[in-house]
Image 1 (cartoon, rainbow, N blue to C red):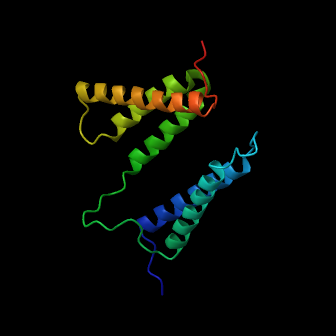
Image 2: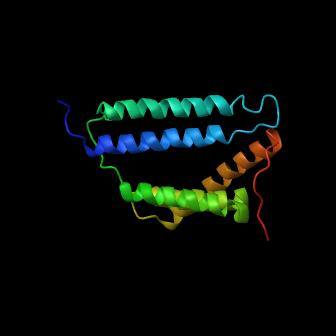
Image 3: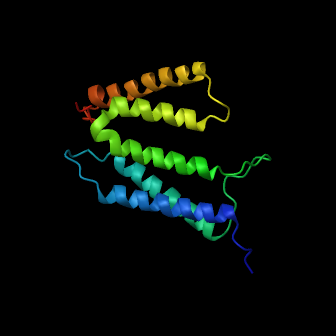
Length: 155
């Protein structure tokens, strides 16, 4: 007889279903304007879907996933919900704030949210500097190298 499902099993199943659903939505929304437009995107979506299915099977079999360390931490459900809500807010704000401003704000808020200790002004300043550098680098890579248009700030 199978052992009863633990909280970890339920979380694995929920994450697996969400991952497969996201991969399915990405797959259904594909529309490439060039012949090789999906050269990178399609394999990434397929790998995402396969990994979601593997996690789903492991969850259904109630196999432990990702618990190799001796020190186990409790899943910070509150932090995870806040992170998902912040991500959804960022996506909703993209058309208005643009990629640069919205990305920097999101990055800084997420960095402060992820801190385990109380943030100091110096740490927040470091987060802002890192956010500006990383988001600007991604913006320039997409717009100047890959020629992908990203949302701009609306006035």
